[in-house]
Image (cartoon, one colour):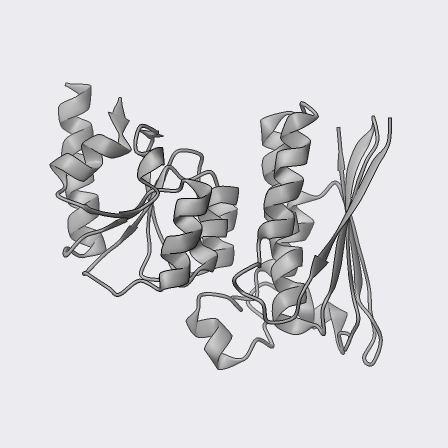
Length: 115
Length: 138
């Protein structure tokens, strides 16, 4: 079992907002930027990696029941998004790494967790 | 037991967009509706809500819950859809470029709604309002 908090520590993520949701359990990762596509396919507990940083990603994460959002490659995040993520207790995290690197690291974490 | 609630959806208000869907989700949870069913309602409602925000002059989302079904009605103030058949095709979109850059306008909205619904109906014509009805049986 991996929590958002463990992701933050092991993948060296920056907590931007929604710190109250860090104890949530992460089950799988989903990478995507087309919001309708994400809505249709993201699964409950997924850690969602997207380069979209506008406020509506919080609604997508919430309705799609994502465990957290990770913004890759150090992208700037809208102030409104931060405000909304805090309001809704959705952990909004940021990494300097690419979506691929994040997925690779998460895969390694999963392997370690399962062995 | 019948519950009916309605939520106003404002044109181009991306900050509030998703609130109607979130509120509906919370209400359904409180009513003890099964979670897989809530998820289908949430996806369909979000798509309907975003369509009103992006494509219409504003409107409302109406939730109706009876012992047999959850019904979502998305009703806007126009300007209506010229070709419903085209609008229903996956990948077809009339969304403006700036909205596409935000990750919307993939042409998945209406097909997603239909996929989530047990019954789906859309009524619209150019120059008139659009009414989408989604029924999910309990």
